[in-house]
Image (cartoon, rainbow, N blue to C red; front, side):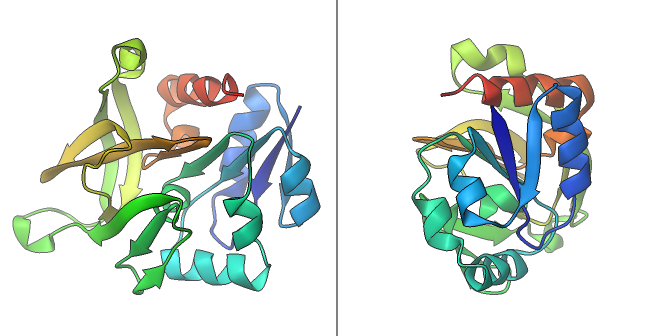
Length: 193
């Protein structure tokens, strides 16, 4: 079993790799289509902007590769946001795998933007309640609640913290920076097939 961590121009690749390593999974950090397609699991990591990441994926001819993946795919932070159709960050057309848009937190609502730190994540599915916990966030943009939302958090408004459609799972938080809770969430991802 191999995990492909896509090098999509965002940072945080090493933190994700260390988290995977702690779970005793073999991984490769790659932007090679063949390695990504052959992996058992794929991770789109994220620290960066939607515009930069999408430009990198286009430049590396990985948009169609990602859109056609059948194995479990996890998008983390910006990796989750680019699963959607559009991001207000850089007026960016994204992968379009999940319906909806990404918008910026309202700075006029006395919120510090970006949201930085620990926030509660609440899953709607009774079977996933064991994952209700505090996770580490670092984001200025978010998805509002929609039909593929499986967990929510609150920062001014209630927003999507986990989304899932078919083989694509996205989390707005950083499991690799979320201690034991993040480790359990990654284990949940690796149980998918």
